[in-house]
Image (cartoon, rainbow over the protein chains, first blue to last red):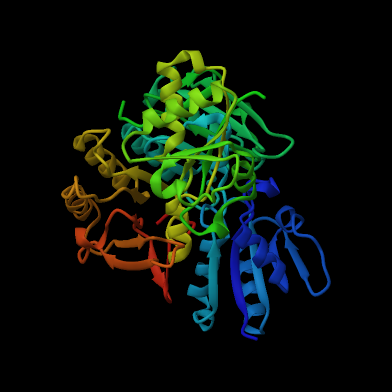
Length: 244
Length: 244
């Protein structure tokens, strides 16, 4: 049987948000590859080998998937959220670029519910108009690129969603981000910290930029900043469909 | 029984991309409200009333949902894709703002696979790094706002996804958009036209901005523009995870 690599999104955490096509791909897999907590979401069964790996080894993981598929395996690379949003899909294509012997691999990317859209749904509709998604991790890009993108997004009056706002190894990125946004957008702009959305640990908090502090986010948080028109209605936060 | 309004995303078209929580909400609904082709995706059954309506009546539709819920109905407002991305969620909150008597309504937003992420998955991973989502329809915002956002997104070197790139009533928006992008990004930037993704009519085409013409899109197309580093590998298009 010809090997395949399927890069599948498990959504933000709740199995009720896993699409049927992803469930079916997992059921047909011979090998599951991914970061430890994501592989842990897949049930063990006879004929299935789980390959959990640590964080920050995305390219090794991608290459491993391609090697297994070359030997006939039905490999599923699992990401949380959507695999095409700051996740494993790009890593697999980067690995193919540096190992062109795998360019004919049968690859499928199966979308998932990405964290910012689950967070937006839980909060109301803060991404209801033009928006940007920005990865605040400076592992793969310098801070000046992040700062420039924040300013362009703010000057375009985009709503914004931030992935990886904070980690132990990057304690100051969110602090600098909040300072840039305060300067560009003023203190009254709404900002939502959405932690562990769709899991039992879900916690949402909306404050103004003037009130926001870096401690409101951790590794499991997605941050959403409204545009100039974003407002509260009842217990919800939403961005109207028309320009502000 | 207390009425509820659930705003649910049906994904881009393929039922294999409908999440289990959305399927369950549809199974418990007494009333389905939405644009005609989306309501047509819900099977008729005893005890369920379908309320299909035409396009451009989003606020009437939202108010109708709130009125039915106030009378005890379990209403599901259906959107294609994700209801929080250029769809019905914001319209429901706008309706509550102008009709505060409904502010206590029990509202849930259920995310779905939004068109740009299904399109990106079908193409490879063109949204694998920081990106923007822009609605090109000028029904609800003037062209100068769209043009400004295009320029800010290009100058921030964001990848971009465009919703509603073209319709009979707006024949020139995409032409102007392509001209702005050509000026900002140059002729070699990759652009993907993804039509009817996940349906039997799916068609993907990737060209350079220098080759792109407005006729490559229609009402059912999502357009994805890469950032400066976006490239082809084999038959895929992807954006690497690091800054260009």
